[in-house]
Image 1 (cartoon, rainbow, N blue to C red):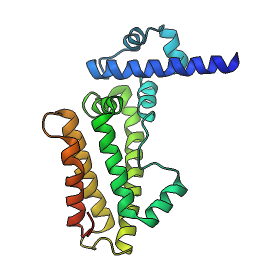
Image 2: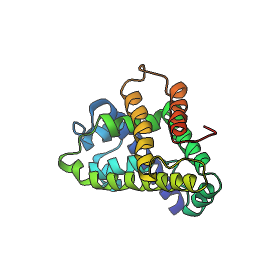
Image 3: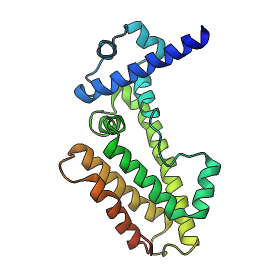
Image 4: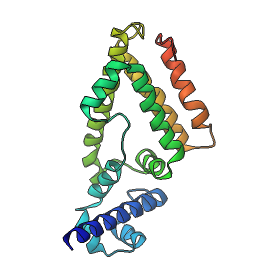
Length: 207
């Protein structure tokens, strides 16, 4: 019975988060109340508070359900980077862009994150947290680029940090603009060819 109760609670929690994605996407985060989410999910306001302290906690949980391709277990990531740092970066980038293009829920969350949320008021409290998470992603990318240079797979025209900034600008620029207007270009057709062209500019011979 306890296990069943925990399973039921998890189902309810996921239903609430799914509802939050829908309502945030329609109305924007600042214009959405917990009552709006409760109505969308078909639960009481009390059920919302049983799972989430406030809208900030709900928004954070919505983001945390996403699995970033870069955030493998540390040991596994280090092995993959040491073996083939550029292959690791290409695989992670391809998976990320592929999820955006083909996973509607993954895409909607990023549309909300980039286009439907103002990081002011209560939401300002999580801005620092997401900045730190972004820095973690960049640290991983920079490590992979540094290893690629050490293995002679990239030239040293740019430092690993500079190369990382450029790669993040390319990938985030593609994702940001495509989620803003999917009719602008095909993410699937343009994404990895553009990323690989950038890597060739860094001296990658097999991009």
